[in-house]
Image 1 (cartoon, helix red, strand yellow):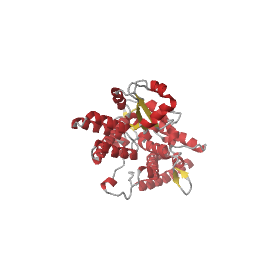
Image 2: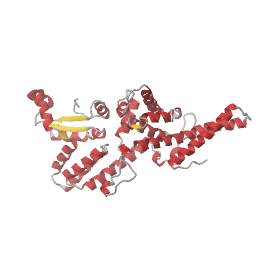
Image 3: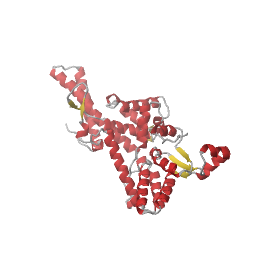
Image 4: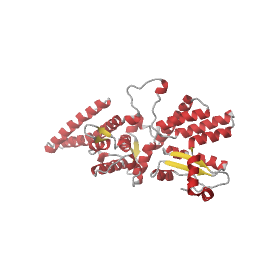
Length: 372
């Protein structure tokens, strides 16, 4: 792929990642050109791809050097001279800083910004350790600065995704009853917004759909989600989330193997973009081991998917049960108002009682309180 003197774009990176997680960038020896190119490669780190850089000899470009060395010689040079992007960037910027404390401070901040872009927790930890050694800087301090940037980025992303509304993680009444101005009316009305709960289920589906949820029955996470969401999926507030789950359910029913890559390389651009956003979002995990505190009750994120699946489904079911209960109660109230006592009303009353019992069981499992 020839960049033709321009920086790589998000779309180009996503397209390359569909074929390989590895990128090898070849530059000529011009220092100014290399420094400019380095600024745009954080996008590749953010996509969780592996970047290697190769510098050609002075005065050479890929075309001239390939013509001189031939395919085998050119490939051999690439294999021998390739260097990890972050290590190359650290070494290059340190050389320019020339032991000047102020310039070195700028280098450390630049490297910290790049490390914070890496979504994989373990990879980020290894880069932090090695870059701390190269920078001759305390690893604990580097970890602290990286975590500050990650937290700030997550907060900014959530604020942007919520259109400036409160963070749904807070589960506040302000989020649950957001005022939305409808096109059919000039007056804002309160609606219950279930977008957060719906997205949580989608995130579990995308990341863990092929994982085994129940070893005794060999049921996967995707199958378990399908069993528990089919009855409420028509009540979804966000069409994209419903579309993604329905697509996954159809694949499961057709016995088509699905995994994270099924969604991230999906032909539907909306599903593909959502999957890539989910898979590239950093999962911050507290580094308790460094603080000499051994975790007793918390698993690493990638081992905790069963609890994540249960929690996401229970919270979604709780939210949707409120909507369904309201619909049934409205029908019962109307029947009472019209003095109608028929079989349909009796069935609705039985369904209402069963759903109330199920809702109370869910709140018990979640440890929450439902106001009547």
